[in-house]
Length: 454
Image 1 (cartoon, one colour):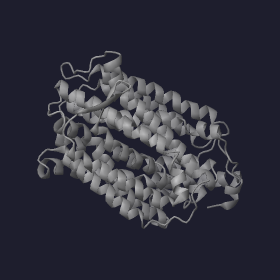
Image 2 (spheres, helix red, strand yellow; image 1 turned 90 degrees about the horizontal axis):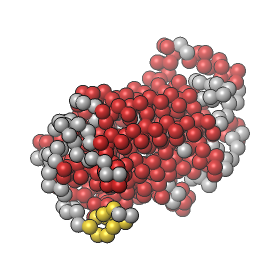
Image 3 (spheres, helix red, strand yellow; image 1 turned 180 degrees about the vertical axis):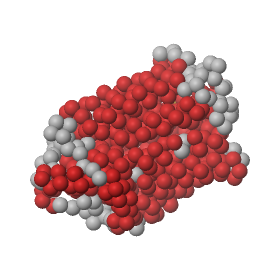
Image 4 (cartoon, helix red, strand yellow; image 1 turned 60 degrees about the vertical axis):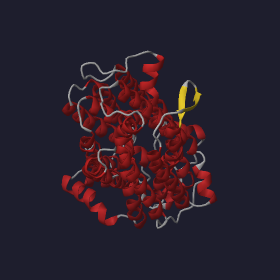
């Protein structure tokens, strides 16, 4: 990394970190609504449980295509007013908001899958440059804090978004029952709210944060002119695989098994809880839709924990190391996800803010701790190993090791659920937990020479 460039970066205040990260609050509205409700929407439209993972393939395939391209383009973009990353934040937000309005109005499975393609592509256009934004603006001593601030907003946005269907059905008395196979009104209003928040939150970052110009503008302009050649761009995008830093290769294996676990969580928790706790696999039944709402509450818990843990993880990383911190968090998360296998009732322990607290929420605490680390530590470790002038590209390339395991999951998890686990999706969650435990072990072999953030 260019150390002269690093030394010129000013130390940012808390509120500057806040402004540059606030867009993730909106981005996570989109992801949280997608993660907690997409399988529910597919099932309501008639999808079978063992087909859900295949329909979800739209999301990772889109990320596989979009992330490195957007990273490469943003590395080679500069505008005196809009900067380098912010044009992509804003354009992605416009199309993501549109997709969030369209998704709950899908009348058939093929329409929902098509909108999922659009939604995931747009969210990725907004999200990918945010990771490089931290490397662009922050000195190495603040990078862990920068990623932790993003994690805080991801958690806050996801908590609220995950609770929206419950809020509309329980507080606003909006119907939570599908009529003639249509998506319940509670889900539709949740997505409309998410689209508006996505656009407004990202716009806040676009118009309140600034970007540092390239330190050598003449050299940058020459490189950008060279990069405009399609053959050069394609060669550089594909050629990056052979030039990945050692740390990035090591983290790739960690990410692979981590994201198989997360994909299992997002796809199958709704079906698993409906089956093992609510006793139904009929998506048209009130019990199934009630289970869908409660899974939203469970997801709100793990995201809320991640928002709080975001401020604790940098301290844990300083006291131990970043990879030790990540190992501990993944181990706890994997064991917690697998423990859902042992919970078969929804006995209320107590109520908090009018919401039933049950044993189903306890594993979500461990999952939330893992989620906070997943969103922070790999990127903080990686940022210290990347060249500054290719930060966006390599952050985009790193996303391959997020989407490839999701594609693998889309191909194999449905088979395992139907033919190995007899249709009981809770066993698929156990498999996910085992994968996260393996990722924890692999983290021990990652090289992280940079010190944790101040």
